[in-house]
Length: 163
Image 1: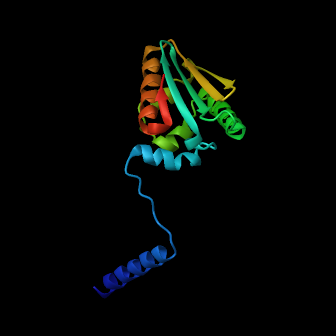
Image 2 (image 1 turned 180 degrees about the vertical axis):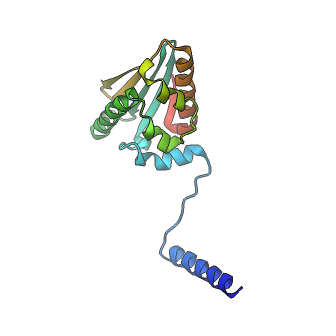
Image 3 (image 1 turned 60 degrees about the vertical axis):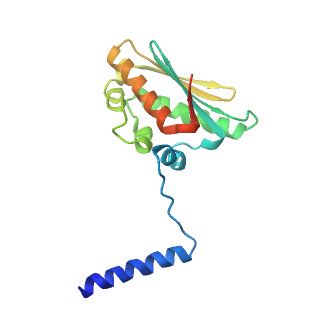
């Protein structure tokens, strides 16, 4: 019992120390808040200065990331570098970056990883950002792309839109 009491006292002191030092733990209430606050761990650009756009097509889809202000040239460069790297990784079936942010059980993700050889993925630079195009003739993978886009739309919240 005394050991338990000492443990509680230690926890209280630790908490008081962190609060006194001005440290606080931000507990996100929604998946959108988690993605917004943790996005910098995966994406080098500022989510508050950019918009993710997801367009589902009959053969797959197009994912764009563009700046909200066209004068943000440093953000454009960061977007382009990141999406070019992601497109190469996706072509190999490596979706570890989105999985680390959204979770490994994200809808469509496992199918995209397993079916990478049947998905044509291409990168294009845009004046205000960049885009990745996903194309497949496999109906199962088409559905996986659409499910994955839908999950990203939901989880990016105000930082994303459908087109």
